[in-house]
Length: 445
Image (cartoon, rainbow, N blue to C red; front, side, top):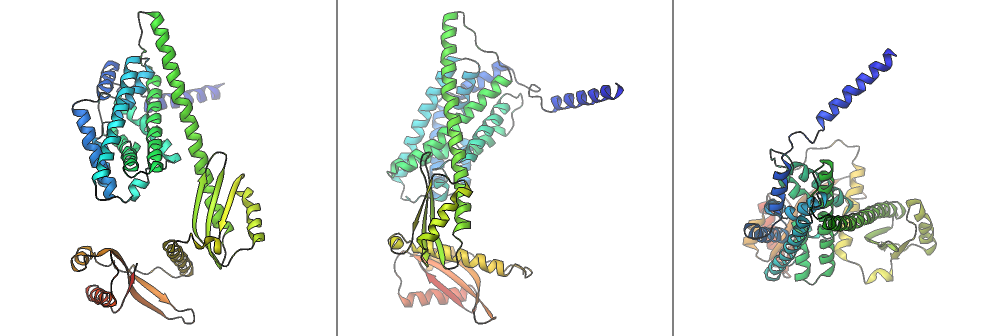
């Protein structure tokens, strides 16, 4: 009896401690103040509209030149979170006017953002899709989690009396602007896949921020709006319920699709790594095609051709990787001749060489790293204006029939035009002198 009483006291103390630590009602701002603030931020006119346009131009430039810092700065400036949180708040408190206002302004902001970024990418002289831009064309399961958790953090911060740096952090994490700029890039360059993928990512971020805002509003028990006309109140309630269902059901479906795609791609990578581990055959390119009803693994091989029986045996083992109803397409020999990309081959071979060399040296104590070569970008551009890029690194060469090694500085460079042997010798001699090394191997791409 005494023991059970002591245990109940302990659990009660733990419960009280947890409630105090995780209490969201402490330091909560006045409801009217929060609603007024979010309603004001949901409006796009005047300062907010011009701020959005400037931020879109900055984000487009950042994506164009592949500058992460510039993109982050644009996301800090962007006011796009306002109408999305306004929609979630409107649903949570049954404020149909706020819901309409948020939806209308979000649509206006989206159209203006895409138009602005399209104009920029039409006039810019740089048209290559950089890594920062490509990252916004295909949403992943992590984008769903980030948008949902970011929305929760943003709404919690918005309901506090003392404002913190949470909102800017949420704006960076959820990344609403870069997908819109990527959609503009897709329109400007006629790439509908980029346009659709970027809008898909933007839609996912928006819908999960809206959903998390709604959940926080209901958790904090904000008072729902009441109407004198009960008939109109029931009508508004039906509209709110319909919009809530339309918002939540697609979000669940999208989350399922993205999670299923991520699981498929992870299983496919493990399958290719384990099943195509041959000494004389190399996978130089792989792609995974995901559709709910049809999934494909496309592989491009070089080296010794695999027999049909070997490929058949590999296909039989796909079930062990949960790759049911997945089609395996293997191109090799003559079938691969027209699809070989020699840059892929070089990258794949170098990757294999470095991997084997690393495994060979695993038992040798790590030596002090060689000093990095100096940055010669400015000097190379001044002396050889047609040089587009370069990479330099000391490499260790080994002969299979000897234990001796030789270290040499290897420089890979790309030029906008074909250079003559005399020009190559001039570049090589200059690199040898500038890098203060005994020998330089110059590889022209």
